[in-house]
Image 1 (spheres, rainbow, N blue to C red):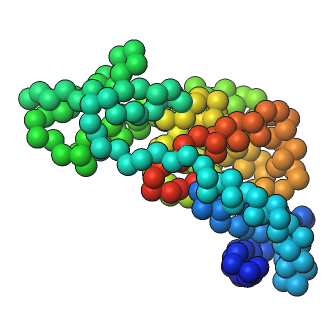
Image 2: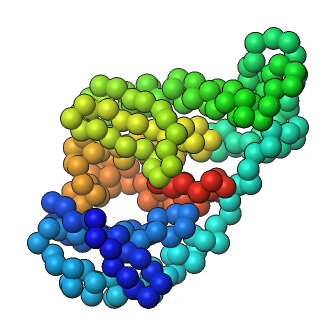
Length: 237
């Protein structure tokens, strides 16, 4: 991967087998990437980047001002999220197997006495994982029928830079654990996005055309996903 310097802005340049040039500015810090065809030399790419400089700066300013979640302390009445809704945490200490219970506007976290913050986080993360794991088969099956594709396997893991990934060869998709906290519509958008890669590898015009046909409001869901509070640790799609 090559780099271009435009004043104090670094642009990552990735050349690959695509027809058109694509510019992206990624949250949370405003990292800039250009994907360009192999045939395009760096001088032409630089001219393109300079022509988009004002747009890049505008996007970076917007992203840096975006709200971020503060680190979780796992204290009573602390805010946590599930399926896009805000819940207040209630920590219940008892000498029993740890569990998480969703009650109205509260997430009850049942833990053994003197459980530390890291263990509480692990217990809640595992609950998020199980909730996401339970909801995905129906969602995937729905879109397999619509798209006439097959997903052989799906997985859930923590990702620092992406909401999801797709292995075309294995027909496997991976989803970011954080999606359990986001609205169901945003989760579905990421599922469709990754499944569309089974039909088209690159984010090119054909990919966009497929997304437009499958999910006409996908841009709205993408914006909604990126507009929601980012984690303090800084990761993005």
